[in-house]
Length: 212
Image (cartoon, rainbow, N blue to C red; front, side, top):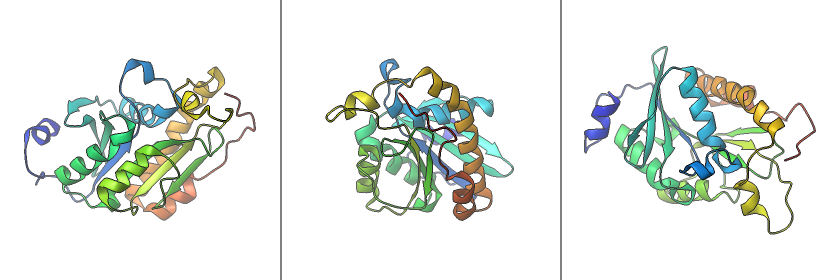
């Protein structure tokens, strides 16, 4: 089904009603793979691996489809680089024929301690360039986003180096558990609704040790 979608030039007509687009934000390239800014990619990779599916290259990014009890989750890792993420999101929403309320974007957040999760049904971009471009392209802020705190242990002017830096060894060990919680939240969002998903996901990290 995915290959058929990639080859068609008009919105897919076979996509079921219970279909969702989940976008993990990041930058393509091996040099960015393990960086804080790529946590969205990491979460989707964990979901695909747990579901025994693989990503396939497509327009504006790599896509995998997870089928779960009648729901279909289209997992998208944009290939546009972070600052142009909206091009991929707009294209795939139109391609799949989905409204913005079927969209979920997962990204990093330097304003939150490492491991803190914040799921919202809408909101501002908070200074995140990927979210900003998506809002510009969709001409709306009314779509769900899940921010994963990566910490903010950097000196003034060091933001770019920090988000493009790697997680610490201790933090890397915690990512699988965070991914599992996020995946559960995404399933709750699809099966029960955003309110229940927010109650389930939103949290502060268990440990106060957020060193990078």
